[in-house]
Image (cartoon, rainbow, N blue to C red; front, side, top):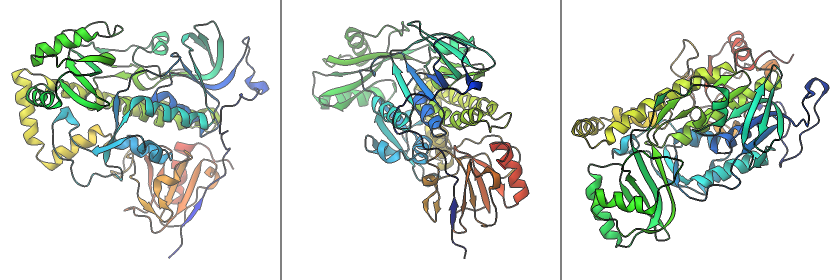
Length: 510
């Protein structure tokens, strides 16, 4: 049996810490005063912006991240990393670092909070949910980007921009002007970049609103638990959960839809707790208070010229199912290597267009499933009857599995044309001779996994690694993986492989 061989073209090593950008070449010379030459400026240093910055730095792209807030958010809320996001962390060598700060729980109960056990045999080596404080995952991703050489500037708000055939000039609120080849808005649901770009954001405004906060209570935990269990039978938007240190996470429906720019008061919480539970539980000493609605909107376009949108700047939806952060991080993972290819000069002509054609339908599906979940949260008789019916149907393993895979984003199949079902899907972290497949994807390059040990990546070796491993646990002869882990080709014919290498990785270097 042939022994496995792994070949990889050396790539430029990103600097381990932020450093000044190199002087532009004459062809990149900036005609504007006070030029600051960057390849990409990212507005927003949340999870989406930080992940995108890191992905670009893997390809030695000069990145500046602008964050309008001077300090991270002062409050702590727990978010969930679903299966697909955990896989992405594993692909970039981040998973162990993230696991240190999170708490695992079974991959179950995601859809509308309907409690069912996790289906057996989910197609992933990371088939669980990881609860992690939002500020922590933001910090970890930002540190990762900075270690790779991204620059982050806080207290910098985008006030305007102009784009031309060569790049984008970004005006900051303090009057400074910056120049880059591309601008990406990762600046949230109220995205300044999207508004300045004039991209429509159609959808539905909030019909209901929910209060969320962290505070202490003045009654015994047993009393809280009993009342929450009673109300939770019909009201899935209500809970008080111990958070540690004497504090509780409190979620309660609001009286109406208010101004989300204005945080609620402790009195608002007390009023709504009394209205729903008959007691305010003696809540006091709030650590933070906020509100969220169920608005559902999707940007009409993800790209206009040299300006792109990702994360909540491109789509917003209710938080039910915990998909928002995951959807944004996965946007960044899809966009990063494509935008880097465009900047590095080897992208096929339509590669950057595939960002919208692949990711916008995914967002549409998420918006639909959150709409459905919100209906199932209603206390009205009709939605409650539908909830009971779906609860019964989820006893069927295939129904339960389908809904979990949808929320966890492991059911996604991009349209790459006719072919086996695996084509266009992500490949799980299978065993290979060198350990685990995802360990070979840390550099953000393509990978040919070759069980025949007779194919080659030829002139694409500067962009695509080659693992010749007849022992790989795979049901097909060979697969070509994009940097995001999706299967771009299946087969064993060199000529056919070359055509697909050209489709995704441009012209060969020689």
